[in-house]
Length: 448
Image (tube, rainbow, N blue to C red; front, side):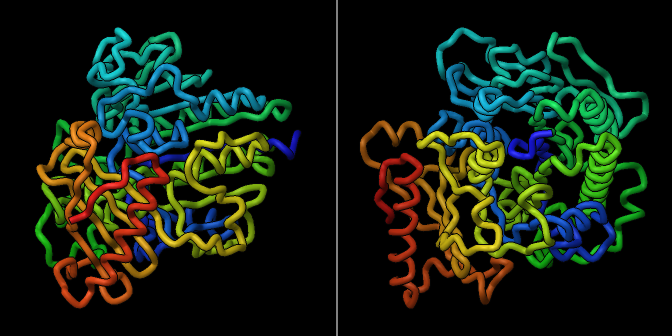
């Protein structure tokens, strides 16, 4: 056992709000295993995505760069073949690497002119587009190859592996995670990235699909403050959504138990997080792609060597920090051009970080920063994915769209962007946003 190189297991959910966990305030017993993990490890109270949509944020997690830097600023953009990926870096550091679950980084229009089939939503992901992972059991768009109680993924030989009959998807997924863990030894460190699709809505059924009985079991919930009184589909969908989250929590318990049985637990770092949240169609016509905390804020819990003691960390944290942190945990060098900070160095300390930054795409082209007090967001005129066109025009123009006073309006119900008394605040935040955009390699824009 090499304690300088602990095993690393990432447990990654899809579209999960931070407040679905008891340790973040959920009143129902949704997450006993994650709550225990937080009580023993380090929970980041203020954690956020860097892009509230599936493909782009996954590109960031696999490359350590913002989506626009990778060329994956919208869904259906595969990673560049020569991308400097997390898996390749971990292999160079002596780790065995594995990926199980939803990938969402192979399909899409042929942006890089490399001759690949433009769509792998229902077909196996070729080895060249797997980001460098050795062990592979995945679907590019898992919601296209499965439902709550049926489906399959593809192994490294492009052969389908089907869920056991009547097995809930989270449970079937975790069966394969346990299978992977059972093949590991104490001699060689491993890095396993587990990408669940829950609680993401089932696209072709237009709803969230919790385990059977979820509506009855979780129907007596406390309405989140950012949803109360707003239209959307949360009234009918939230119980099933919570059912999905409870199933994920059971999976966490199974993974931790398996690591303990294999005597791998003391030298394994577990990271639990989600790609973004869900605002249940209250802020726009779908579940994400907005600057609001309902889809920006995510759970983030670390457990294992270097992350102990039950700390509730108050630093602002971002998913862009995860790749740098993983390489640092592994004790290997981090590329100079990778973004974010090492969250190991945030444990027990104040990082001094003023704001987190997020890019938004598809529904509109937007940029946002969140400080402890303010949420400030701008949008490009015209809507849609027009970033590329403007980026090559030589002049980037955004317009102010949202300003929220989070101290007095934590549920973001009162947009102050037109308040003349806050003009100086907006000027200050605009400069901070421009600095974050420049750090992300973007052209510094004009903000109207």
